[in-house]
Length: 116
Image (cartoon, rainbow, N blue to C red; front, top):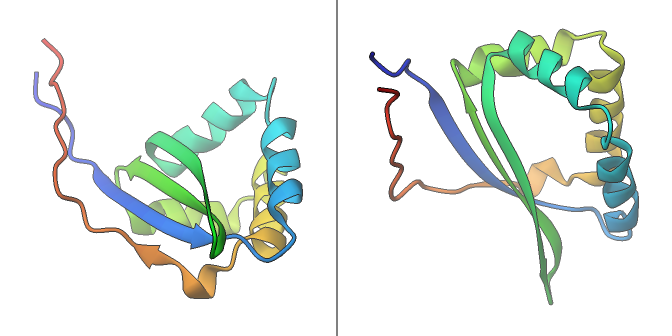
């Protein structure tokens, strides 16, 4: 069986000063909402998503790793979504993420074990 093509992106996004606690509160609010999250991911064509917190003397950032059938289509569907979980996520992003200073990280190696 052939593994379907997926696009991968990993981005370092600084958190706005003083917004780390608000971001982490949003993360905690996602607990227990896995079905809602997975439905949104399916609609966006996302097969994998991870967010890591990086703390340094320069401030806090997140490392956002995502794999989707099409990153462009994923962004379009997310931006237009009226799902409660997506509306809440967009509000959190606007308040907490300093997207103007985001850095796309260059992939060095990605291995995927194909299904048998």
